[in-house]
Length: 223
Image 1 (cartoon, rainbow, N blue to C red):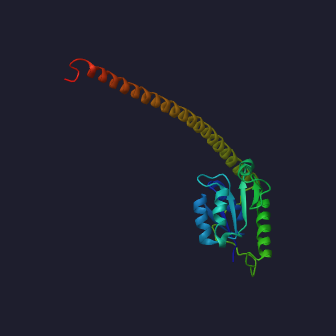
Image 2: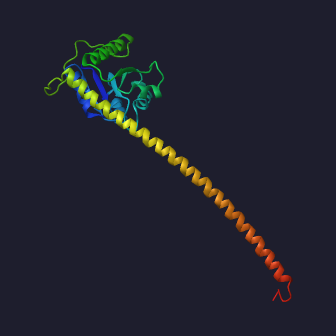
Image 3: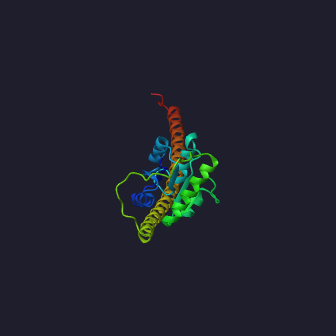
């Protein structure tokens, strides 16, 4: 029985790179975002999850929390992978206790060693079934192994993209916050103007009543 590794990452480059590294050792399942990753996890019950942190809609930590809500997924080891450790630390204070963390870029043998160590720990704790024999290579088309340089290049490119996305999102957030302040100030000014107009209208109504009263007191005013 081949152990199943679920890779949840919005980058197809990273998913294919990890699949290349794990080829012939584990069955690799893929998901391109947190929502579909949760669906795959519930359907397949993987032995381990590799989870990217920076993803649209649901980030890695939100996805982890969603996975942990289910009893049959609660003990599955999760490796959070990211080239932006500072982003992870903003959401989860160190030391990371709910998951194992692997910073990108990482070498293939480091990833394999981490996975093997976590799976062995789960077996020792009785959370995972012991295999009667060595894992059978997963059925797949022959794939040329990536070199260490190619692996680092892919991760380096992905990190640059993620940093650019995060930086732009931060800029948009600041702009949005400034716009919110401007809108709030405009609303206050409009509210003040509305109050002034209301006060003026009341004054006009009083003045009209006084004029009407004077007219009524004049000779022939009631005609």
